[in-house]
Length: 115
Image (tube, rainbow, N blue to C red; front, side, top):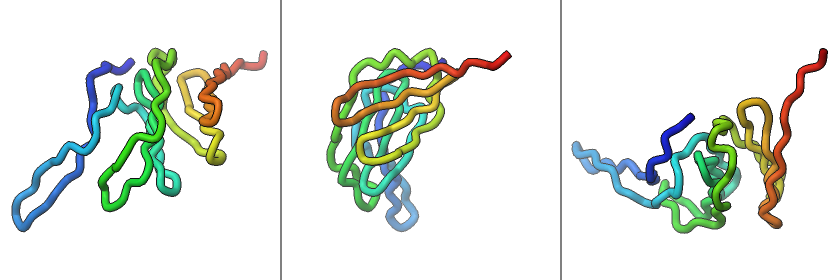
């Protein structure tokens, strides 16, 4: 189980011999798993699912979509897979979730052992 602190996305900036962090974007929950596909970053947070769009040179320009409170926080999201622009899969402890970005619906699937 993760602790849900306010999180942020930072960019590491190097100027000559100095290194600094620049906050680029506030995240609504602690990131658990993520993937990058084309021009989008998909982040499964401990309580939200966020899609970030139009990033270049490490700078995120805007949030495209934030799905509200996800009941998976106790299921430890561990991976994100993109099937197409609308169909996203999030690996969870004991199963997975299928997210439709167009309808913002989430379906949960539980793995069952065969006897």
